[in-house]
Length: 77
Image (cartoon, rainbow, N blue to C red; front, top):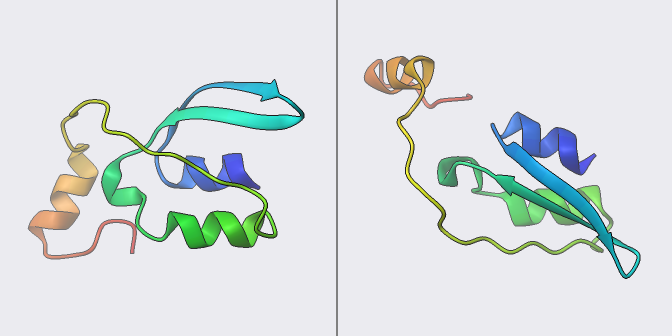
């Protein structure tokens, strides 16, 4: 499911709406979590979904991810 995938990418869901029979989801997702998203979204929706992305704001990296990066590990891996 699309919402579950976004949540696994540390998304902050801001809202959902139905427009012309389609579900629009507005969310803030860290850029580092968006790599590979187009492929995953197509797989989850049998190729029917599309997305747009635009820069919004900067935020400090969470402490647990900072620690993983300092240890040389890939966050989320």
